[in-house]
Length: 419
Ligand SMILES: [Zn+2]
Image 1: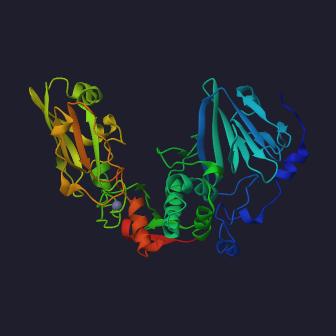
Image 2 (image 1 turned 90 degrees about the vertical axis):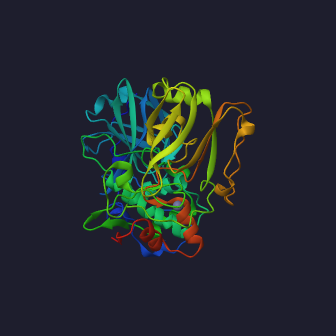
């Protein structure tokens, strides 16, 4: 399967691109004013500094790679002679046997400007393939700013105000750099909500690309170091403190009042859970309580979020950690731990939603189950609530807030450091 030789491909790949010499920070003032400017894909070796490694797939028996300009496979020792190459547009399926030449895995690089496609999906930068059990681990390595291009379109809508996209570009860049690991780790970040959702070229948009250009290289700093740039969808009116959620106080993540996410569809929510589902999900936590009579948020922190949920049953009472309660029932059912009220009834017609909790948000009202017994949960916001509130940032930007003002609101005391 392997084709040897092809030193010419290495020469093409090694062509210097002065634009990338600054280590992943996109230079060039001219580009910043071009709406929809799309940075060129990179195919240089070695990659400039400030690269990030993103886990795309693991445990795969094989992957199919292609690139419009062809691609080459190198062993992992920075040897510039490819051990294999594929022609332009040629589909090539690689399995673990392709790794036999590279003790530390292999590197795959596009030969031209077109991106590499992994099972049809295009990615900038290069790929690192490692053995992963009996299969392959596929990691996308690319300069941080090109990574952020593929994050913005997955984390927020490109139709949102430019100031939000810019603020998010800064925190997404900062967050990822803060997650970088040493060479003993095969990758730095997941391409999922475990870190930031990353979709490669398919996630890019002209407004998002503009935002990355306009903030190129900018990072959120506190004191002499990178700030922990957390974010979540909607804080429900007050962001959470890192100390309350994770037990670690961070000066700029103490939680702030947020009047700007009122228009979010997640600002207020109601969810319904069948009682037998609740029992199944909570398992042994409630097994000994008999018939459940009430549920209530307990031990509220400074932002109003519950640390515990108290479950009162016919035969006893149990306090359940609120985070576990949310995880067990599902984070899209219990969207946050900023819980207003819970009610358990024998039938849906006995539910008494709190009209004072309603808001003018455009969220569709979920339909309760047709039969009881069931639990109604009323809450505010979506996500852990620490750091930037995406919907609040949108609301603030629609009122004229700039990217810098957005970051000053959610990360008080931090500064934006430009390259
Ligand atoms: Zn908010």
